[in-house]
Length: 155
Image (cartoon, rainbow, N blue to C red; front, side):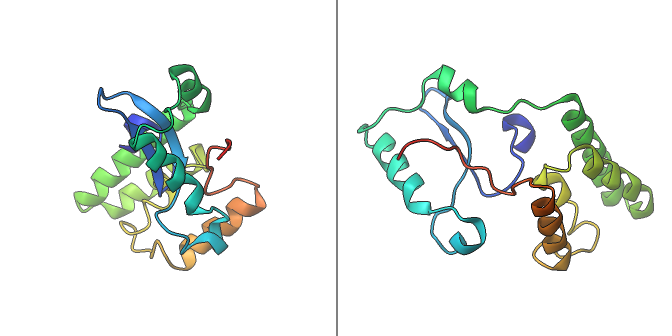
């Protein structure tokens, strides 16, 4: 899913209509406000839009609006995913030491891609909700790279 739709973190919400078309591209949203203090994202705004779209009370984005908000992967992003996939495969085959440089390279190529950086943690014996994640979050904040990038539009 992350490769197919360009997802770089969770939770990522993607609306797909009955014809299989993207009706709203990747958007950071939550089902509740449990993490609002951490993320600054109010779940109610997205839920109101989603319910209105599902009920037919409001339109989805047009294809050109969808395209405006999509972020296509760069060559570095693609290489990072390849490095991550190779590292994951090596790890699964019992070659953790051989995987490590590929995990590191993936993170260097796509420092903004949390699915890669955080996604490696459990495989590497790190807690993705522990100190390693909060160190990553802190570094992202210092670099002014937000972990959650919701689509900014009107309610």
